[in-house]
Image 1: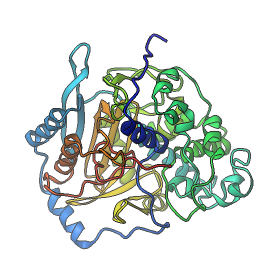
Image 2 (image 1 turned 180 degrees about the horizontal axis):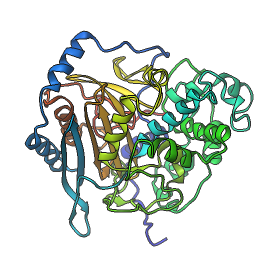
Image 3 (image 1 turned 90 degrees about the vertical axis):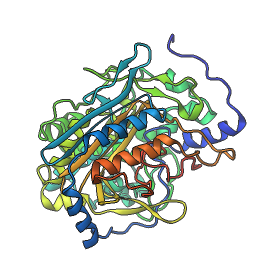
Length: 450
């Protein structure tokens, strides 16, 4: 194909690092560390609540927020755009370039591929069916889709384990893009216009051995969320993406959020999306035109920062789920880094991270060339969503065991804290992502071998 070019053979060190990264996570697959056994998270302390209340009095500082976006751009990210809100107050800002070939600047309201932020939407649809009595969270997955998860595993893995990534089922991404196992990114180009069925993706993940006994540990897997889509199909008789559109996207009043289906193009104004893959693609290549059936109910959504803020606000204020289901969604397991410290707390398609003003809830996402983070304070009063159009810009260290710190990651952490807390909070912990060493997560290990 005319858009495909050979990838230069990288150094042995870079090949070793990139191979581990690809097998571990190639985009949608999470790069967060293994967690301890599942257990409920504790609620916010009174001190955190007080910090939140104090921070609520700080209004959005537009000059500081714009300076924060400029810092991300200056650190080397091509384009970054964001929406932040505090009650009725709004900030929409952008910095950098949307299209390198034309010099077109980014705008704050561009549509964007939001990757695994899709998981929160899928989880809401599952919990809505739980509220209607059609899906039991603690029932075996094999009771719903016995042909997709047969035998003993189908009896041990529950719906809840799919939702909170404690199923132990392997991710499918490295098998869906087989060149990644050979230290090249050629299959990213080869499969630009491929349509792949959810059952095929599930087959890749379930053909691999269990990572651990179901319910005893934590490991991020997109296979879980494609399985959830097929459970929705089984119990409702509807296409899961159409169901999520009707029951979640439209109910939340979102105007610029949609599943693209087999259409490789993004409708409406959007940035080009450039992928570096830790230096394997040099210069970074545009992947904004892509058939996203490889992500489906795990990560195919297109949205805007403004829509994501509206979605999480509607969710956290109780307008999408009954209180019981929302409480279930926010019951979490701890995800620990390689030192044993808690990096984040993962619930049912949503996670919480610690910030200088207390916990924030949301999700992040990464697909070829497109990164997204959306976080909200627990009551939905203060929020931000951020999109950026250069992914995997970091580089491996000399040993090939981790990624060197990148100034763009630190700049995004500072922007997050300014948007949510009204402070850049120097020295705040740089944690809080399941999509790997993209924005806001430089503390998480990046090159975890599988």
